[in-house]
Length: 196
Image: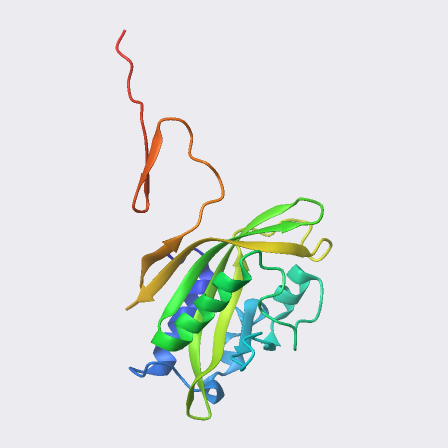
């Protein structure tokens, strides 16, 4: 489920732009059309070494990470680099968008939940060339721009099919409480009303 307005806006723009094609062309992206979400938006290149360098990164994203990101690797600061690499290649391979729930932590132990959107892009007619995306925090704490994110962790991944998300995989670092069990994407907790 796309929780953040920026995620929904960018997905809607991308979906309209592709007009029935698997993905739009990189040159079709008009920054003025997405100016409201441009600060959270990025484009990465799918390179042969799979480092995925940023070709473009918005100002809010750079503030979140405390540096200019152009040329840096998308995989930097991710605890599960291999999982993120596989995810980017899956988006590029099946030409289907993914929404990723992300947890981020700073060196000062500030925590922040974010939403990552990954969208395939063609570049000069070539598929598997670029990824358009956005990384948006669920809130705007005071410390953004002061304390950079030190590491990101993937919490859950959903595939977007016809504008609706479907669970693709889930990663939970927290243990379930006693009496709780998981069924698919649901967590059931034993309990209920006590009769006196």
